[in-house]
Image (cartoon, rainbow, N blue to C red; front, side, top):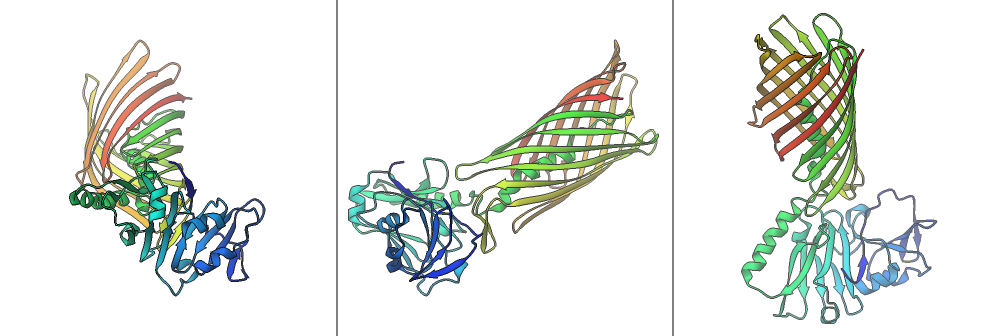
Length: 446
């Protein structure tokens, strides 16, 4: 995109507020931009042009010329609109005047719900700008787009101004295009609501999807317990419609008694999320403990419990009436299966089971919980040949939400050297669609 960009942000961690003339200055210091709170349009001109970048917080209504904001901000990083943070002003109507001196794009974050926001497109501005994407909004509050009144002073019948996804793929733009039918404008308004519904800043639940997928795959994964003390390393990759996780898992375990097996693992995963409006990345760190208890030769109990922590790199996440940058998320998950095993002389075995699983994840003010009953079965085949044990396992299950999962694992183990490995592939259904997992495992026993 061409033109000058006036960018918005949120900075909650302000150190001090000092009254200075008719405006308030929030001290920046060093190379950081100076931040100013203006109480009305007349105070924009009072901001000193001292060579520093200036970030401007509009704290009261009125008509603000974008050209003047741009000049005063001296290529500022940010201009933000927020009534609630400082108690709001007496005039709740803001008019952003795109005048002849402003020749470019306006990139703004709306913090909280700013009602009665008007954007006035003047004839001088429209005659000078050539870009199709004339105004850009990167961070919405809930349904913020519904409060924006776009005014074209020229009342042109040649052009229409509609909402659409920005060409960068991030945020929403007001796009100028040749006038078409009323139906086109109606479809665009509907599309606006669809686009806003998938912005992660307004829907923090979406920030939890990578962690939820990791937990769900962990609850249903194929796991082979060992009689001997072992350690293993497992690279893993998860894929879903809008995100991918890639990570590494360390495992260790042994048979504690004649009937009890216990394994522990720790993992780290890097997640990347992208859709047509938003993107973020996060690191997920955690661990779990698994056990299996053979009640007798035919019956068993097995279970898992784990916790995860994630640092999410995403700005302007709505947290109630506030906003949060780079939020943390936490979660735990647990499951218990009761099953029976039928062994056949051919090496084939069948292990149907019933179980219960639960998980909980939290980020900012969103707490996602889920639990379900589950039934399924393992079907496998093992055989020994030339000092090697080969195994093939298929697992399938369905839970009380009617979500299904399926996995297949293939392994090889050298009996004399006590070293081997396996690969597994799994898919599962959840409330955000299908996701898949691929993992490999290199194991050494002692």
